[in-house]
Image (tube, rainbow, N blue to C red):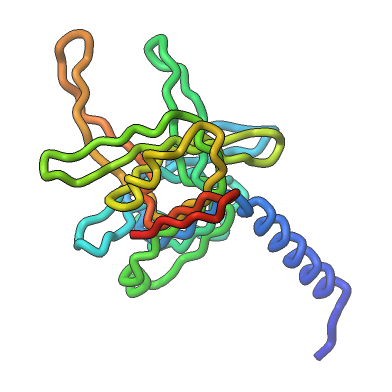
Length: 234
């Protein structure tokens, strides 16, 4: 086999890219397999680089699915071709940003894709929807019970990102994890493993009109308090 300078250069670039992606994913990693179920829309530009958004339908084990918002760079899109209706396997992060809307700041959540490839429809059966977060509790946890007596605790995590930025990610815990999370305080450093889920809810406007909205959150399957190494698992 003849190895050319271009081959070596390509191998070095691949290793550098993999190393860079691994560093970026250190505190926030998302792995998904899903179907593109919306048109691609232009979102914004940063330093001349364009970004686009679309919805990814990710199956659940319960024969239902989550519809997740995705952001992708114009650099990655050409490698995928026309992605409408395609099955994609993606690697990325769950990110947040504030959007000023109707006189208020609104937290916008999106899966930011770093790598993507087309896969066969059979891959959907893997139900791949995985997220790992390493962050800090930044709001007092809220414990409650459902009408059926199930325990739930809401936790808001601040997850550090490159360039001195942070993502603020809403999480929800259940059962034994909920009781554990109820005792967390602002500033606690925790790691969580789970899945991203979408949830439809209705909101009553000041005009009295009721509108339907979509919320996104992390459903935690396992969590760990970093400093004390205490674990709580379902």
